[in-house]
Length: 125
Picture (cartoon, rainbow, N blue to C red):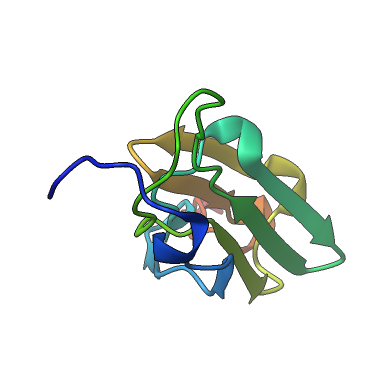
């Protein structure tokens, strides 16, 4: 690629895209782990909302632009991500935790204590 100044008409542009991010759910005895792929998104650009049992993930990546530069190619689109998850009754919504690492949003969704497997002691008599 030649880094030459081009007119505005020569610059390739891609408008903001809206995508449903890829996700994965795993379950164990204590709860669920929901992983959502959000490439190019910083933790400050992620919004999580919970309304009753509906969890919504909204995020946007912001492609940095430079004031003193003329853009000659724009192949990295600005992207808005949005996904909605209906949580099962067995999730304790008050204990949900979220972490952001390497473009992945990792949510820990604990199960309610009363539905977790437990051992019942048998007494003599």
